[in-house]
Length: 335
Image (tube, rainbow, N blue to C red; front, side, top):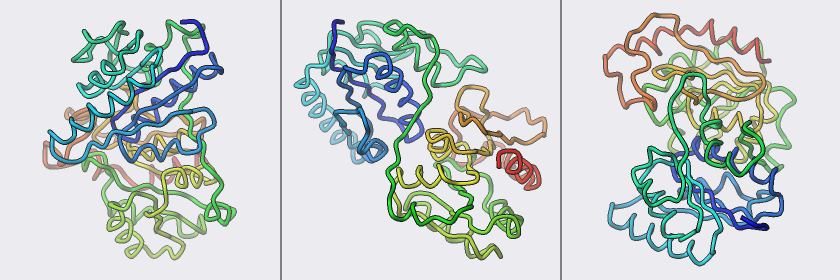
């Protein structure tokens, strides 16, 4: 591909997936700074990449609604993307929707993983496996590696802007992200209350962050703790949360989107893994990071890569029996 070229990256899965995919365009831009980079994400996740220093085109697919209407919007988006005349399209998303979008671009180079259900619509594939110890960013890097000189993946990165609310933060504070989309990836609510209580004399201010849908959980934790410096931040944008994490003493999170948000700004991170495990490539990447899991020998853990709406065994020992003292010790390690 002679340059400069027009490149599209497609990742329309969840927030964490979009953040991890950012390592791909970081690596591409480092190798080919003259190329024009576009990114396609699910609607809502484009807020992660607002005012980005080198993304020149941001496209979003609205995935909510009935199946038929979603795919009508997908086809329309694909036709708009075709008008961009991309030279290459890369997608780490192993889903029919990403295959449809990539094919509709009609780009001469279309790359996906060899496990993609529509891989026959792509011009090249890369191997994909969940080998222990290989992080998702390294797996994703395989898609672009043939065009780069390096086998080493870049780090995922976001570029928070300096808003007034972030500028007015206290000198020392912690950030907690107690919510998760999947119940079995969420450390139980009483544990978060106990953490806030235990930190009462250790840190003056703790911000509870999450989306608007997490507000009831965050409010219950705030009301239940005796720590008077706990504040709820459920209305701020994703980049504002990332900027807050960037300045925090530490970030405490589940295995969830906010964990990857913390990695994207290299925030000191303690990640609580309940039903899942970091062994298959979705752990935190910050230079100061600690993963905390139960010491129990549970034959049911991990019960899946992405969690469940309830514990398949009905006991949730991986979360209920993970003690607050171990998490407190981990916070001391990264602070």
